[in-house]
Length: 249
Image 1: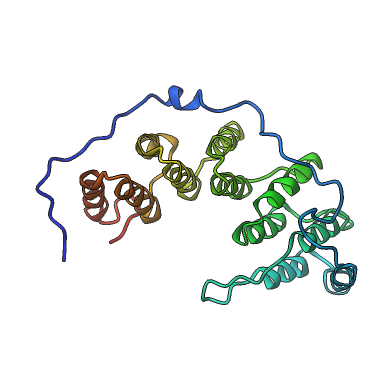
Image 2: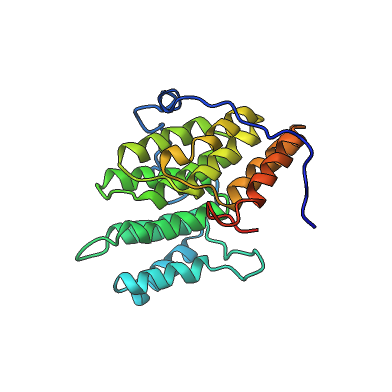
């Protein structure tokens, strides 16, 4: 049954794009650099690491076999369960990838590893490995940056997420709905609901259309902070879109 609102449409306060951009730092935030291939917070299992290295040596010969190996290690059961990869194992795989010859794998292969670690909440490991990857001269793409933003926001470090957004813009990438949804969710988690709402209004300025996940993220944040009337009006906007902005209800 469709919801019909009797309230007046709500319009978010708008700010200039330059005001939003001024929140961006010019440098990537400092992250701890790993001193070895073993995580300090995880017990060392030499036999496990040795077996993984041997498995990599025998099965990974090129980009296709590497991505198949990574996807097998990071696959989902379809019920929300993700095959666990520990920080130690990730560091072992990462080192192997950096040393592949005649050339290193593309950044898309590293994104699979980073994405798997992020899904299993090993955010610090993602940030540390990214810093190492960045130092090799291999350029990240939009997906890499989106993973980083998600990690920062999940760690309660939304301001660093905006630093990464600044780097995305300087790299001439166009942020997508996934990128902005992570930032909006992070702001809502910190009860910065008005900042989340203002960011939402600026998506199209950046060439991005909100999807149903972006809408739902802000609607949930508004409801959690007691702004139910605003949330209902936003729901109406989404429901009346009829796919115009990529939102189908």
